[in-house]
Length: 398
Image (cartoon, rainbow, N blue to C red; front, side, top):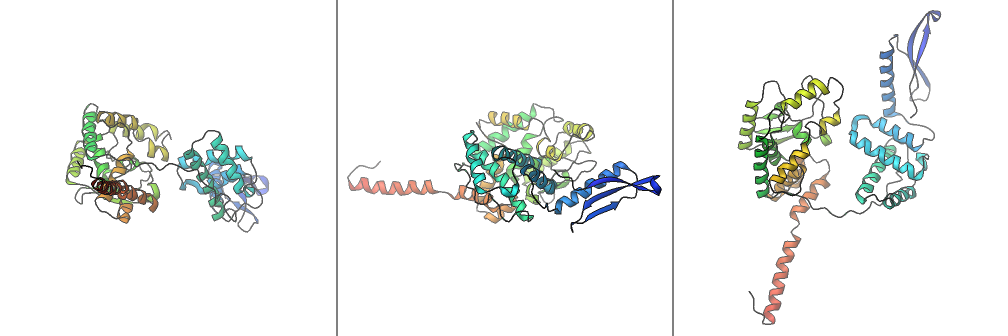
């Protein structure tokens, strides 16, 4: 990727002294030289990086740019506005796209290139879901280029996505939820509370609030209001006691708790040693993150989303197995609660706010799953019609 800012030494006093200077093209296209006024190399490099970032956010690249440079430039401008996982998906998809059509000028890409890539991906054995995800990632990069006035239109604007079968939303029945809670309690009792998640409390709060796994694992006691019986989803900053974490879709929410769950939280808080801010992070794991991973720079924003607790899925699978639930994920608890809210008469807007969905279509998908009584209505209609036919022909009814 082309470097926008160069760091140079600028001589002073007839060459006996020097200061660092930044050289770059300004927004008017003219060459700029900014003297930093010091000789600290490390500080100068940080200032260069900051200026580079500032220019990237509003920089328009005149002339041509190869696809790989275009990708790097776009991701650099986007910065930390997207997750690392989203960044990886975009890079993987674009590199795969380049491998199919070549590292051509990004302005030369057409719909035909997208269709060629789509078919080539399917021919290589990629699933429809994977191809759709890759196409969406590439399309997003070109959309950003349009927004930044680098392109007049998105070449992927009218790309036809591979069709996917409509997936059934997996939710747990009431009896299954009860068995899961009981199995979680028995599972927790076998482990040291310093090293194990208090699973029955975690699942109970999830069943009351539809909070995501990451939201729960980054929940602190400050987020819990025992008097108001609520729990909040708040972003976290890097402090001495907490690590940085961002809410998906940046949506702050306040969610209700029941009397029983508040009492469970009170009991858990009483048993937890003083000075531990997180509700669900085991004390031993918190100590490891604070004393080992963070000081060594081995703790990232992505880790705060996915690695707060080790072996999370393995433990959940054991709980589900003990509960007699063959398949499922922690996110299915969230799906269960959202469906329950709809089944109990809450509006789509209300559910959207509580669930923290940024896209109304996501909420509507759950509404349709609950409201879709087509099979039941067809059964009634068929039974009525069949009854009339049987009576007409004198066939005895049972």
